[in-house]
Length: 438
Image (cartoon, rainbow, N blue to C red; front, side, top):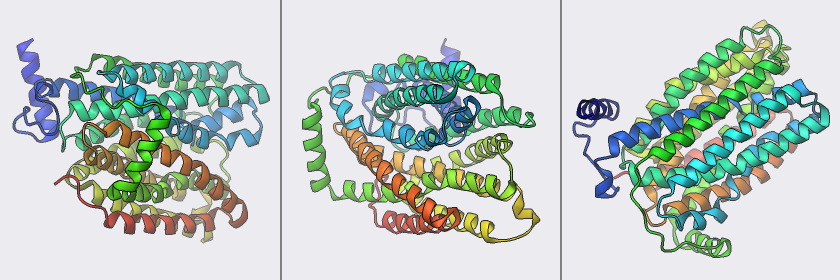
C-alpha cells in the first residue's frame, strides 16, 4: 500500500510539474494529503464524462441517430439547444440545494448515474425507435440527460475547488481532455470502416459506451475523499435568484466575465455550421461522421494539455486567444465555401477547419472554467458557477435562435462572418478582464 501511494505521488508530481505533491493552495489542509489520489479519481471521472459527451454529441452523433430512425427534420434542429440549455438553465435553482449538503460529491455521482441511464435509453431507441414517436422519445430522453448533466456540472466544480489546489485545476482538465481525445479517436476510426452510414447497431454500441463512460464518472465521484464544507447560506430558488442579481450588480468582474463568456459562444455555435458546409460542398451525406469524430479526437488530444497549462498561468489570456482563434476559423471556413475548385468539393478542407475550431473550443471551455473556479471563493463558488451557467443557458437559447434565423436568411458562409465578428468582440472583452491566478 505504501509503495502504491509513493508511485501515485510520483506520477502526480510528473503530470503536474510539482516537486512536492503536498503543495496546496486554496483547499482545506486536510485535503492536502488526499490530493494525489483525488487527482487521479478526478482524471478518470472526467475521462468517462468527456468520452460519453463525444459519443452522444448533439452536434454529430444524435443527428445521425435521428436520421437512422427516420425522425422528422424539425426535431433535429432542437438537439443542440436542448443539450446545452437544458444542462445550464436549472443550475441556479439547484445550487442552494447542493449547498445544504456538506459533501457535494453525492450530487455529482447521482448526476452521472442518471446520465448513464439516459444514454442506455438512447441506445435502445437506436435499436427499436422509429419515426416521429422515436424522435420524440429521443428529445424527451435528451431533456432528462441534460438536466442530469446540469446537476453534475455544478457539483463537479464545487468538489474540484475543495479537493484540487489552485494552479493544478487547469492541468487536471487538460490531461483528462487529452486522454478522452485519444479514446474518441479510436471510436471515430472504427466508424470510418463503415462505407455508408453507421447502422442501428453501430449507433447503439456508441451510446452504450457513453453509458459506461458516465457510469465510470459516477463511481469515481463517489470514491473521492471530500472534506465536509460549509452548509450555511443554502438558498431556495427565489433567494438564489435575488442573490445572483446582487452579485451581478455588485461584482463588476463577475459581470464582465459573463459578457466575455457569452461572446465566446461563437466557437460552439460555429461547429455544426462548419460540419454542415463540409457536407454541402463535398456531397457527402453521412460518411463524414467518422472523419469528423476522428479530427475532433485528435484536436482534443493535442489541444487540452496545452490549454490546461496556459489556463493555470493565465486563464484570462486563454479566453482572449481563443476568441481570436474562433474568428480566424470562421473566416477560414467562409473562405473555403466561396472558393471554387475540386479540392473544396471534398470534406477534408472543412474537416481541417472543424479540427482547428475544436482546438479553439477546447481552449474556450478550459479557459472560462478555470477562470470561474479561480475567481470565486470557496463560500460562493457553487453559486457563481450556477448563476454563470444559467445566464449562458438563457443566452444559448436566444442567440442560438437568432443564429438559426440568420443562417436561413444569409446562408452558412455569411453567418460564419457574423460569428467571426463575435469572436473578435470576445477577445477584446477578455483582454480587459482582471487576472485571477496571481
